[in-house]
Image 1 (cartoon, rainbow, N blue to C red):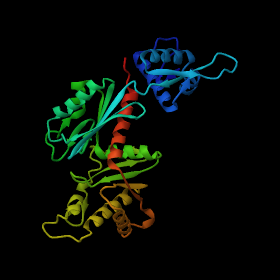
Image 2 (cartoon, helix red, strand yellow):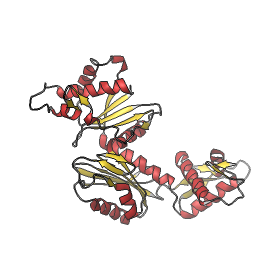
Image 3 (cartoon, one colour):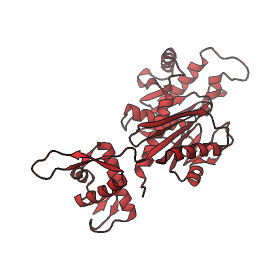
Image 4 (cartoon, rainbow, N blue to C red):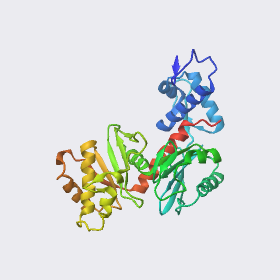
Length: 349
């Protein structure tokens, strides 16, 4: 038989450590999704034998990872025990680094926030400042078992390879740095990719949805892009660096936004036109369902102007829905979602 992609001849064979971890992860995930369940319900859902479920639930109860929350009504036989996952068994920490501030949350396994913090920006300081922040919170909350960090730059597998203006983080393998020093599973993500993940989770968008989330930004514009519910990273993880997109005859997007055209002035609505051209380009290439803007960057009147101007470049019937959202909320929600994935997937002995 095959369980979780690993072949076994029967439940009588002693599971390998890899299989033990797989079974516990699956029980953990099921309890978090269901809220509460009996052994029989877990056995049916996960397709593990009743003795296997019983064995591992007993282990998880002994460590405090699951709790007994009561007994079902009797149907003539023994009353079934109902279990729930202990959401505070382990905690996660989400941190986003921005030009003007550093925000973080500590949360449990169902996403409830235990603590929030706000500090001046540490991007221009040595990475040891960030390490000290995490280390201090870990000492105060020893159950912290994952860290998700968002940065205003391009990231490839935990290494920041493009972060203009912050030399101390350029070409820094931040994931390895944190894990090597603090031994905490860590994920590092581009800020706008994290915002897309948080927005889709908050709106409960389906897998077939495509969207772009645009931030005009303090460090220059950037975007997160999802196609059919999946983040688009690109061949070299450079996807979303829209500041380089050519516009007009001699200006890219960031130059068009700022009115930089070699000293001469632009029309008063140059910002609307530059954004409209970007929306038209993304509509023509991806035809997304939504394009999301930061609510503190665009007034409703400007959103309407962008929609009208974009319709002069591409047929109106193909335009995406234009909307605004709270970037900080989406950003932190996205980092928490990534961190929860680490919490659920890891096995702690």
